[in-house]
Amino acid sequence: MVHAIEAPKLQTTSFDLEELNQRMASAHPREILAWCINNIPTGLVQSTAFGVTGMVIMDILYRDLKPNPPIPVLFLDTLHHFHETLEFVEKAKATYNLDLRTYKTPEANDRHEFAKRYGVALWHSNIEQFHHVTKVEPLQRGLNELNTIAWITGRRRDQSETRAELPIFELDKQNRIKVNPLAHWTRKETWAYMMEFDVIYHPLLNQGYTSIGDEPLTTPVLPGEHERAGRWRGSQKTECGIHI
Image 1 (cartoon, rainbow, N blue to C red):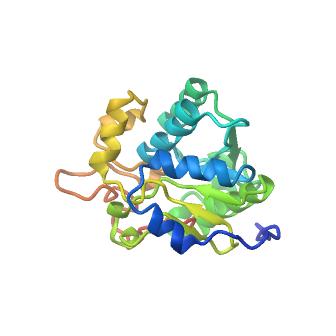
Image 2 (cartoon, rainbow, N blue to C red; image 1 turned 90 degrees about the horizontal axis):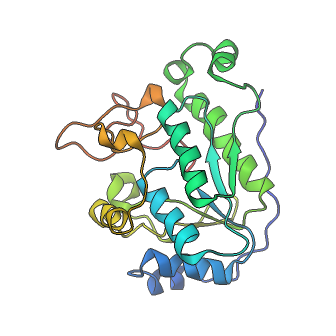
C-alpha cells in the first residue's frame, strides 16, 4: 500500500505571483530562472523527464547561470522508461555534472517486481493507480525530502489544449511555487535554443517521437499530429497526474 505523503509546512509566499506573471510575461527563460535563483536561494528544484524543454532549462541552469550550490534535478524512475531514456539521463548527468536526485516507488525495484505486485499491465487496468504509484507519490516524496519551496517544470502553452492558459508562476496544491519558464515559448523557439547552444537531446526524438514518457504508453507521432499525440494514444488522458 502506497500512503499519501503530507507536504511540509511552508511559509506563505511573500511574492505577488500575479504581478510576477505580468512582469515576466515576455521575459526570456534565462531571466525568469535568474530571478528564481536570486529570490529563492534555497528550496529550488528542477523536475524533468529529460525531454527537450527540460534540457533547455537544464542548459540554462548548469551551463549558463551556474548557481552555487547547483539546483537539484529531480527525475522520476517509473520503472517503465525506454532504455534509451535511462541511458540519456546518465549522459546528461555526466555532461552537466548534475545534482541528480532519482525517486521511484518503494514498492518495487524493477519492472518485473512491479508486475508481480500490480499485475502485468497496470497501465491498462488502472491508469490512475499506475500514475499515482510511479509518478505522483514519488514526486511528492521527492519534493518534500528536498524541502522544495519552488519547482521548475518544462511545460509550454502550445503543448496541449489543457496547457493553453499556463502561467509562468503558479502555486501547486501544497502551496509550493511552480515555475514554468518556457510557458510562453513555442516548440520552434525551444528547438532554436537547442540548436543554437548545441544542447544534447533524447535519441528517440530522431525516430518519430516528439514527447517521450513510459515505454508502454508512448508511440511515435504521424505527420501533422500534435506534439503530445503519441502519449496515452487511444485514451482521453492528456496529463499523468503530477501537474493536476
